[in-house]
Amino acid sequence: MAIPKVCGIETEYGIQVVGGDPNPIAASSVLINAYARDVARQQTGWDFEDEAPGNDARGFAREGSMPPMVETHLVNTVLTNGSRYYVDHAHPEFSSPECRDALEAVRFDRAGEQIVIRSMEAADLAVHDGSHLVVYKNNSDGKGNSYGCHENYLMDRDTPFSRVVQGITPHFVTRQLFCGSGKVGSETSVHEPGAVDYQLSQRAEFFEEQVGLETTLKRPIVNTRDEPHADSRRYRRLHVIVGDANLAEVSTFLKVGTTALVLAMIEDDVTGSRNLSLADPVRAIHAVAVDRTFGQLLQMADGSTATALAIQWELYSLARKYSDDRGLECLGAEHVGTAVLDRWEQVLNGLETDPMTLARQVDWVAKLQLLEAYRDRHGLGWDDPRLAAVDLQYHDLRPSRSLFARLDTERLVDQASVDAAVTDPPRDTRAWFRGECLKRWPGSVATANWDSLVFDLGSDPLRRVPMMDPLKGTAEHVEALLDSCSTPAELVDRLSG
Amino acid sequence: MAERELKKKQATERTDEAVEDVPATSATGEKLKAELDDLLDEIDEVLEDNAEEFVRNYVQKGGE
Picture 1: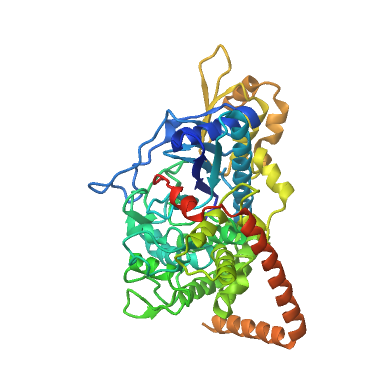
Picture 2: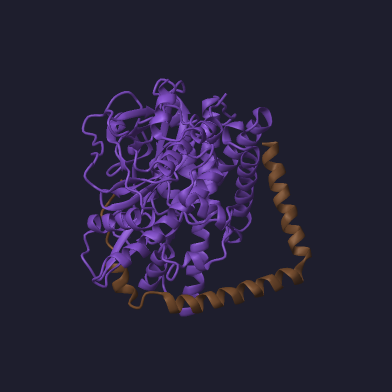
């Protein structure tokens, strides 16, 4: 049986300084420091003990590949909701805590947005030179520079990585139909200048290989970074770099939910009668992004052809049958698995009949509807800079400026539960232990990372508490224990006793 | 594949239902259009003044 698809979303935000020092690294530091110091009052740092971004899931590192450097001197905090909030290169990044299902992933993704909004407000109060920080939840600057929104999924180490690559690639190429964030024009050499009015995905045109270790150049559709942040004999953690950052909750929900479901089928070695391998996945991902008719035929490895929508229908049908045969326990709560399937079917039907009916659910449609209406009102050609401005401002997170926030898109999580996720960890993964210890004993947690906490108990040497299983350390497991300990020293003693 | 046809059939049925209900649909359409008009008014107000400069100045370093 497929193992529980514990998952998370790691968002790198765009950042702009209005009227001050434009250095994005300094700006990101100001942003996150302002939040840690003035809002969260939280200064526990990140522990780099477990970082090895150069490890390759295929068991080797290809010659000339460039694993990312781990930067340790920049601002790096762990929050009481179990997340990591830090400066990654030249961007603020929010890595959500481990979530048990797609709905929790949506809730904590939204909490990340709230944290950034509160950070902007705190930063504006902290600087006195009249400058403002503006943060965007998008993936490119329109000039050929891209930054990521990554996902991660817990997987069984016994599943051969080659099977993961083969099985997930068709989904990664075509899922942009419902989780692309949309973009005016194009910005790489993939397309002739001026040839593309609008495309489904922010990120698609930045992908150049099917498989690889890199994340910043020659980006691969399937990333092979092998950092399980857990017991590596039992688990791998698929690091996904091919997605767009979403604002529409249904897009986020389906991005994570359908991917978890397809990965579960790969673990259980479930395949349909049709081989969905594409002849050229890289060319296909570029082609799907610019095809708003959904009529583009993609070359399949077996010599046949299929549209992106037909591939999605095949994956959906396979998943529906998988659910009927085996259930969807691995996707978390029962209603979540059912909702993933029903939503998936709903958007595929919508895409087939009239994509514009999905303007309340899917980012690229919501943005396109706005752009078309704006174009219509002012009689603008697609090359008018005002359309690029509408595109950019769709992603502006400031409530006073955000265009997305002005749209009546469908919400899956209510505001109160999002607000709770700003400070409280998910109850059903090890993030609960991390977050609760930080909440209860902030002065005694020296550092933290995904798979351990380091306690500073005063006179003793630092004590590391390992958390090698993402499904242990839940509220169910340890809430009574934490409640019964009056000091962190007592907790550490009882854990090691 | 039978499943696929079933889903498509359901989609068609849904479309039929919508067609039977013409007055409601166009009323909803009018309402949506009015809402969109209000939204466009608001966008004209909040959109950054100099669109060209605003877009040109937004430059990021590659990330990840």
